[in-house]
Length: 138
Image 1: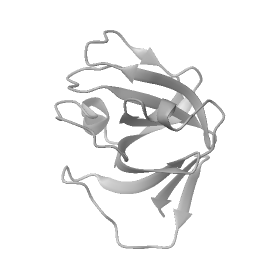
Image 2: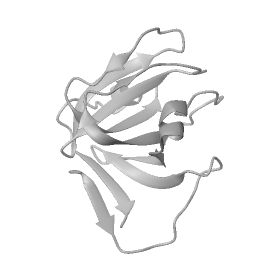
Image 3: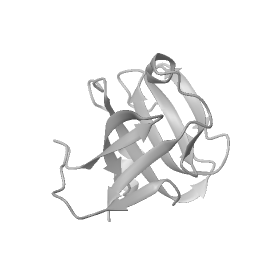
Image 4: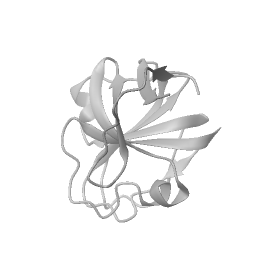
């Protein structure tokens, strides 16, 4: 997957939900992200949680590169979705509310999706084409 960086082995950090943590850099802005990739965790996502603090997110390793669709099922707070392909922002869905119905589809095939607190993209001027670095233990 383009945009993934392997580095030297280091101690791995996990969230209180048992998910591996990594720091994703979107246009050099760090986001401490929980990494999810199993079907169960991909389905659950951030559903049922009370909040997503500023500076944090969830990184979905989708397995297949395609035009994935996400929804706001069981969400209790608003988010921005950042679609990632080839080490760049491939698309954005901003300020999605728990009340938003339907599916939100990636504009192009992507292998990675990052959910961040609502307003993140506007606060940092994130736009399509901005670089994304995703360091994962290798």
